[in-house]
Amino acid sequence: MAVWGGAGWLLDRWLDILVFFPVGIIFGMAVAIYLVVKRYGAADPLPGQRSAKTPGGRRSQPGTVTRTQKGRR
Image (tube, rainbow, N blue to C red; front, side):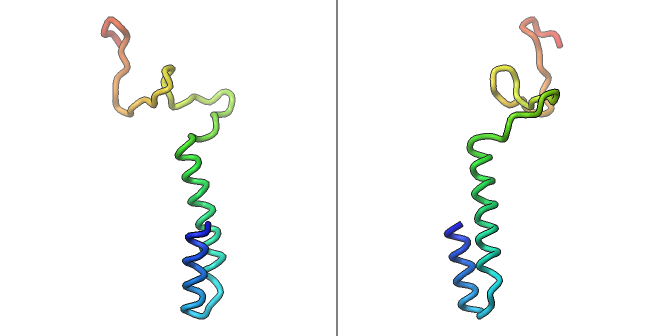
C-alpha cells in the first residue's frame, strides 16, 4: 500500500491531479491480498466441493495419470 500509494502521490504532485493516490492505495491493497493468498493458500473449499490437492497435500499436475501401486489405472 505504501509503495503504490507513494507512487500515486508522486504522480499526483508531478501532474497536478488528484486521482493516482487513491488508485495507488487500492491497487496496493489488492496486490497485498493477492500475495497473502498466494503465500498461505486460498480458503478451504466449501463442503461438497472437490479439492485440487492430492491426499498427501501436494497439488496434482494436470495431464498426469494417477496409478496405483501395481501400475493399473
